[in-house]
Length: 157
Image (tube, rainbow, N blue to C red; front, side, top):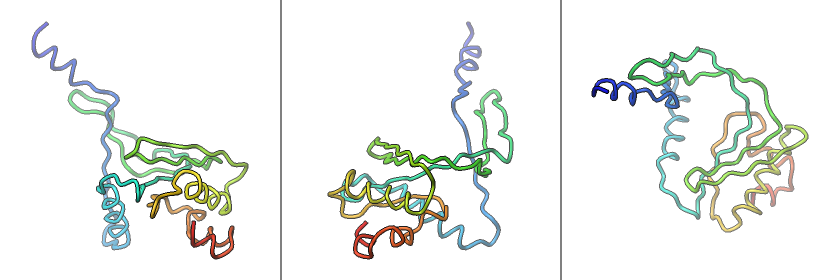
């Protein structure tokens, strides 16, 4: 086998994907939120301030991925369409290599608040502050804690 054949064979890595993000023009809100999330991503691991992602949506592609070609993996656009919701809270702390799944009968603000309370009480009782990374779903707001719990408990969670 020639060197070129070996190089070509090893260049194909179908499991690799490339994504890109083109921000909206003149959108300061997008830039502020993106910089905030990127700052969280670059923080080193600190058990006192765990970084936890909460997600539970099903996604579909809007722009078809560019196919696998020699020297390039599949390239996907960051934009997506919501494919619905599932009654599953996926909680992940990637820097620690930990995840937890919680199934609920429905998707309500109260369910989201209970998930956050479980994080604080069960999984991170010694954390000084839990850094949550969530999407903009209407159930993912601090107000959901106040709807589900008395003010003292809402503020604590």
